[in-house]
Image: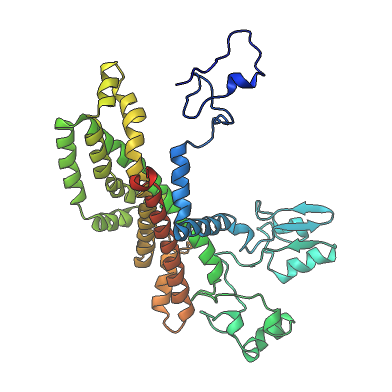
Length: 406
């Protein structure tokens, strides 16, 4: 190989010949090849860049992920989309934000110290008389708002499906021109006169948040349990496996019914009950990865150098085990969302009145004459689970070693 001149101490750095390397030659230690930009602290490694490229190459999964994230981010601002309180109120030169804070009716010239009902025509008139105004969300109903001025008995069909004759009575009462002047229920109302679209937005948010929380917490517990089993093996692995076999043999549904009859059902209570059984889903996978990796040469070399067990597990073995674990997370998330939906459908989920996709499906079953309830719940659950499954397939392709190292 041709000798490559290197820079000596004190030699000027603007000599082009000293920096030119023949084809195939490596740069001196500590230097980057000519024209090569050093990788920043937060830049992706070449392996992770290829994984991202493989994820984007799966068009169906990539676009499913984008659509799901857009829907989820939009649902996080549900109070600004569907609410029976204005976003902003101007009254006597002052500005109020009812979305974030409750104001008594006396703030706007009313007679009572109770929370202001901004949908009340009397309060709206008081604000208008002082030259005030209100900025409303696109949907003037929250998930618990009862529409007392329905053109037809509840469950009422979507407003755009009604005829002018059906809207005539309510339109005359409110002094508006036909159906176009009413506050629309785009997807109709349920059997209690609550807006279906508003409950759908809030229900989607709480379902995804519940699924994400359950998936993250159960994954952390499951990965820790599988890591301890696989790394230490022996009696630790044997006793842990027998415990898991006994624990998974307990009928979780019956236990859930017993606990629900004793405790008041709620988000955190339900999350804790389901966490008791959901953590075992990743134990077997992580255990197998640790059993395989604990005998690798680099692990034995690190152990011979005096590296502690905790460092070996977290810094040397766990990153390799997480490759297989990450591919399972979207599927675990979809399973968690479906579990909450099924419990709400059976009546053992969130408290009555909470926005829930399962409760919407239950109303569709109980009100066959109102097909918009069942169809709305069915298509929402079907689309949400399809997006999660397609995203999981793309994540699986991204971490596939045959594609990553091809």
